[in-house]
Amino acid sequence: MSKTRCAIAALTIIFLSFSAASAQQLVPPPGRPTVPAAPKAAAPSPRASSCHNGASFDRFLADVKQQAVTAGVSQRTIAEASPYLVYDQGIVNRDRGQRVFGQLFTEFAGRMAAPYRMQNGQQHIKKYAAAFARAEKEYGVPPAVIAAFWGLESDFGANMGNLPTLKSLVSLAYDCRRSEMFVGETIAALKIIDRGDLHPDEMIGSWAGELGQTQFLPVHYVNYAVDYDGDGRRDLLRSPADVIGSTANYIANGLKWRRGEPWLEEVKVPQNLPWDKTDLTVREPRSTWAQLGVTYPDGRPLPNDNLAASVLLPMGRFGPAFMAYANFAAYTEWNNSLIYSTTAGYLASRIAGAAPMRKPAQPVPQLPFHELKELQQLLVRAGFNVGKVDGVLGQQSRAAVKAMQIKHGLPADSWPTAELLARMRGGTAQAQPAGTVR
Image (cartoon, rainbow, N blue to C red; front, side, top):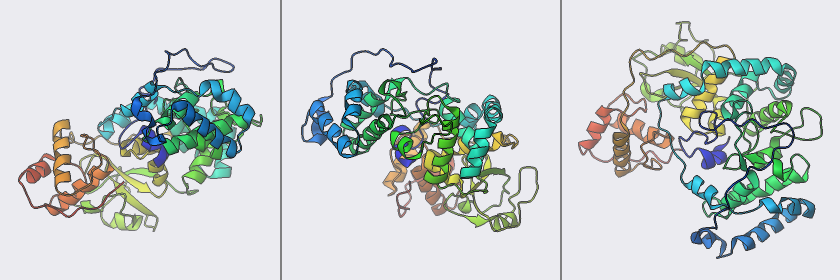
């Protein structure tokens, strides 16, 4: 849900492990859910204490509890939560073994922004019309934007995860990779209990510690959850009104949504477009894009105004094209995977009534996994930071590809091609790094 969240669940192009596409359906029974039975937790690995001055998990946990008390958490809550604050090496192993997905955008969006999810979003907007109208009035976030995240994150509450949140958080806190961050999330989870929003045994979610129907990390839950149904609790597990209001609050105030402005629209681009301008870092008035020949898919001209936007080509010049406005930054902030963020923005546009995106006129050439990985290795050798060499086209790899396309006089649409790979295999002189792009 943010760049911090993406360090947990996305890295560069990772779709959420408990998304509607990959998680088994979990429909909570009425009343308070109970912690599912689980195998006995494995002991911490020997290296787990290396970043805690050799402290055992029990000693580390005592320190976390003291930090929570200092932050205002009551002793009563500490005692109530303690049975759930146990270490599970399996959670850490899961975190370290996250799978990455290098799918084409059209494949991913076709599955995740399928017509049934669009229709479910529209039905939920009608069903909870009062809450959506209130959220739009108070926060300026359109119902379709909220509904798209709701559908992608949990299929409207059907897939929220089935693991004890406190166990996940404290296990990841003891691990050395993001210890400070997860200590903060653990304390935030205790604050949720302390203010009466949830009980410890209700806190069931993803392995990464996210909670609720739009998968809030505890810090976001504490900062942005609102009581929209007036029952005195902020319940993002079972209250649709609370989910709607809280998600709107986070998008508006956490992600800085701009009231009344668009987010993502499909466009048609001419074959003579200056491809080096098709980048989220390049923003031009719509009037400028219109002069360059960019139109709506049906040929209608863009408005001749000064509203700034970027042309986004998630699959290069032969794939779909979108006009990404300032509000699209909320999507990349929610999840910095370009495939996920573009899919979320596209789904929101479909829920709002936009037509399905056009299919490419011909198959978009895609390098196979081993060649994409080889290209990344060549880019690293040329002095670029592409992040992890994993055969997945993340933002850093796209920026490096664009720089090398410019160097070799190729269309600079940031999409890796066999021609670029052949040029780089030819042993050309090293390029100057374009810097670290995140």
